[in-house]
Amino acid sequence: MFKSSLLKQAKNGNEKAFLKLIEQEKIKLYKMAYMYMKSENDALDIVQETIMKAFIHIKSVKEEKYFSTWITRILINTALEAIRKNNKVVIFDELIIEPVQSSQQEERMDLLEAIRNLEEKYKTVIILKYYHDLTVSDIAEIVQYPEGTVKTNLHRGLNELKKSFIQGGVDYGQRY
Image 1 (cartoon, rainbow, N blue to C red):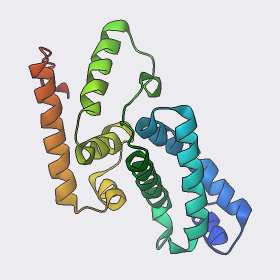
Image 2 (image 1 turned 180 degrees about the horizontal axis):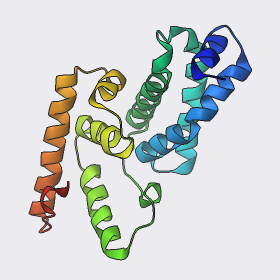
Image 3 (image 1 turned 45 degrees about the horizontal axis):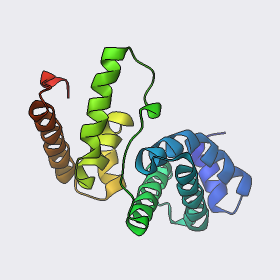
């Protein structure tokens, strides 16, 4: 069954179709929530709240091809709202990243630490671009910024990452 027909069915109140749509997105949603919330329980709470909001507002999806972008935006907004509400620090965990060799692991840990210290607007676009392989236009749709702003935030965020590596005595060149 095609995703678009599932969305049409879900918009018409078919709960099974909605659950199938969620099944296709659940791993991505959990990983994204975990990157924001750090703890498994908090991430699961965010995913659950996202799914509830999506179910309630499924009819507001304007174009079927944007379901994934639409639900990701709900998740990001829900996570940011929870962080602000609970005054939590946004941190990342190496468990999201596949196992790598020890020297690469140290570099990744340095990168995660640098990402932790970025401003929220830079952190979000970098996560979406480099951890979720989204295009600039997809990111713009999710964060609801113009594409030019997304490009600027990516550029500035990458420059901030580079500065933090150079200031920390670690210069990995153009890789980051």
